[in-house]
Image (cartoon, rainbow, N blue to C red; front, side):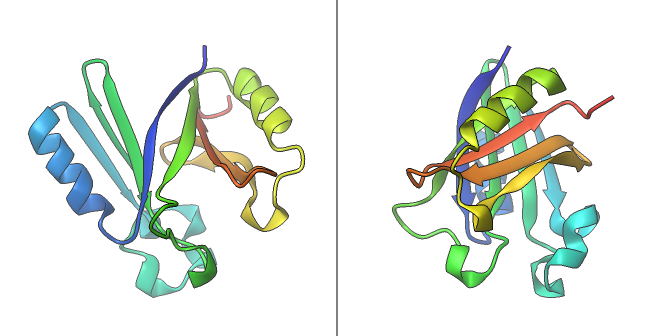
Length: 140
């Protein structure tokens, strides 16, 4: 079953913000730095300490977030700080929805589903300018 959760796109303040939310909400906080992932070689070393994925789970509350990673042209801008975050357990279910929503997506903002240390991950910016980020269990 798919579900959606808030996904703030922060600019270098992701760890600080998510730690603050953790202090207020409690629960379990997971922070993954870009430098600890296979994607690190795609980015300059100055971005390796940024968070590629942060997740806070506290009861029925879940918030995920990231720092800006891409070319400065695509850094989060005020008014563009959120994405729709789709979470699914089954890879096939997630892939089917990902493929449908990626039709007509902007090619320069597209990452097909792939394994990361925190699970399967992919993203796109649809033809309407809406950012979609997908996460699921690793493909078995």
